[in-house]
Image 1 (cartoon, rainbow, N blue to C red):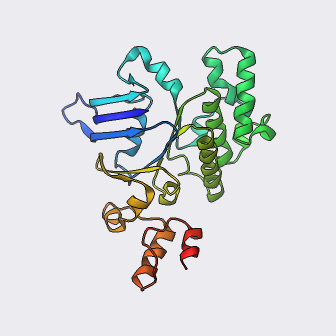
Image 2: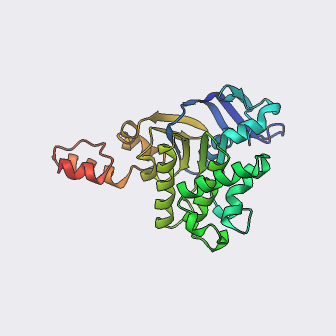
Image 3: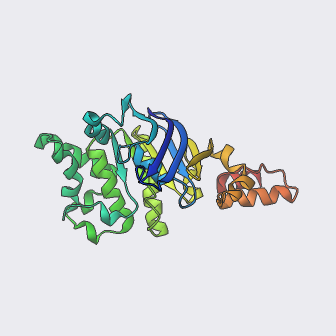
Length: 271
């Protein structure tokens, strides 16, 4: 599991004016879970994400990955093999001129035998539906396809955890759908997914939703528990999924509908 214990973090910690980004964050993420971390810009969610694979180290507290403390310098590469990162802009994380080579790049750097690299690359491309574009240049692909290439590269490294830091924020609606479908594929494979997002509808399918504000974890629970607190979310400059807003409004009009509906299909059943 990933265990975050009373973590605080400051940028420029040794300067006269450090910038506090995290305060007293404690969190546990179990293997196989899908956890969505939401919050407005500057809430600390991306800073927290970078602690999961030791890109940042806590100023206070500890982060443990499968029992390994991220402050253990000797284990940093083990941690980064366990925890893969997908970043906001897909163009910033592709390194090869051909899709297949990009997917194989990670395992090649781990010194894995060629036959095993080929097998892993084939499996990862198949899972991410990239086999038909294996010989294409990544810059010729759509934004959603580029993110799938980045995810496939992590799969080829056999990472147990995939952290996605706002992977859909620069994509069009079709690209966002492609990334969300990739998350469903990862879940079916038993891989832990941590999604950083400010799109509330992307958090609906999560097992756990964590709400960040001012560097602190202010809410957590299942999507149904969190999105039922619409007024509190609005006070944090966040919104609830559109279908939940509609259900709540219909409930106020007197219809027998719970205020924490999460899907169109569920709302249709109640109607």
